[in-house]
Length: 224
Ligand SMILES: [Zn+2]
Figure 1 (cartoon, protein in one colour):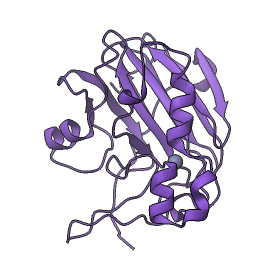
Figure 2: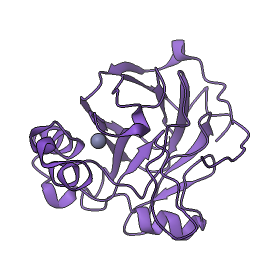
Figure 3: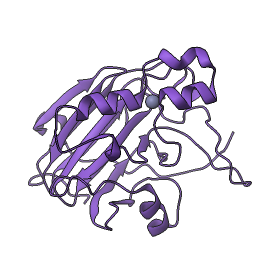
Figure 4: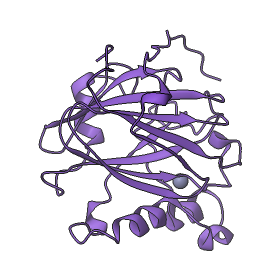
């Protein structure tokens, strides 16, 4: 198992002051817009959950989060406090401003019927997957099609890159109540699939709920 150390960066924000506070049940999706300055928290309520997330510019929906640009810009394959999430255009979408997990994957991608059959077995073809949830959530907005499903962020998911450059879907490093907080740097649309995966050790083969909260920037965000 990969060992690493990190200093958690704690948030000063109080959930009682949040303007949005809801639970995404295991296997379900969530679509929401953020205004610049708003602070967005995702909580891994029971630990070892993967929260598959995509971001879009709300002003230009074709301009989605870019894992490649983000990794190249920060010269680090993992996301944590200080990471600035960039769009394809180079536009800054959000910045991670608090993190008590310490590592989030943006290489492994979202699970799909196709990847499940390759990674696990053909029997998994019919199983619920993140790609289906993404499509279901986007189906309510005419500006999006499946072309808009780009490489995503897997919050709380541990996918170490080996010295040989391979990916290792490892045991989760998150725990109950750990969270990541992002500050919107632009108008952003957030698309989440709270991963329903039953075949992967990264979520202990047990999908669990996530909590999402949003605060308005004013009065909070001291740590921006
Ligand atoms: Zn998934």
